[in-house]
Amino acid sequence: MDYVIHGSMMPMIELTMQRDELVYAQTGAMQWMSQNMDMKTKVKGGMMGALKRSVSGGQMFTVDFRAEADNAQVSFGHTYPGQIMVIDIAQTSLVCQQRAFLCAEPTVDYDIHIQKRLGTGFFGGEGFIMQKFTGRGLVIIEMDGECVEKELQAGERIKVATGSVGAFEETVDMSIETVKGFTNMFLGGEGLFLTTLTGPGKVWIQTMPVQDMVGEISKYLPRKRRS
Image (cartoon, rainbow, N blue to C red; front, side, top):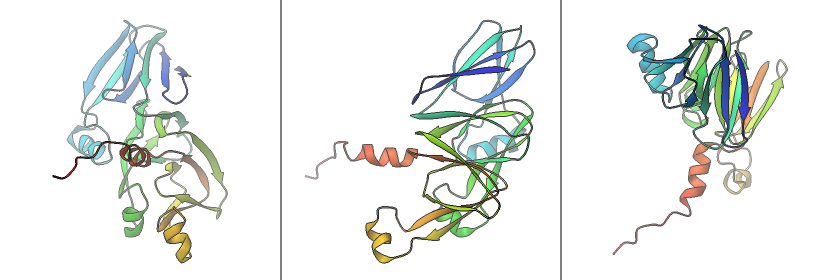
């Protein structure tokens, strides 16, 4: 399977597949496909799989796209301003924010990742349940805004603004810590908590979490006046 990503902040990924190659995708992601591409909507993993996808911000159903001839094509589009990332999970499992999944090869398993720390679930910006991908092959995910990849060494830590964690390898530990200093906490604009990521492993940091974008847009929406 070959792929090309078109565009910048509202990108589209175009896959070129050979006969009998298959990818599965979230419902509503397909933008166009060639006539030699077969599409089937399924409940991947049965009702338990559907429930896992639902609670992690995905759709209960998935759609299989299978090439019926060589060089069949299908494309998937981003649902909000951001970047499309193609990640090979052959080495380690991948944990992503809710809503990240776009499509994947059939050898990739879509599961859920549950935050074990109570504070991280409440204040880490991603909730208690995230998306988790295991197995081997390519998974294609959506990031909010621009995205920066960093590789942390064993024991290396970075502090990330709440909600800016797009994805990380499962070898990375995620926790939260309180912002130090009264003025930093209440006047610094970063809130009360920061997310701490500790290596080893890769992390993907996003510049515009969709919840932040919604908050900024809401400032300019007309408000109903009380009579």
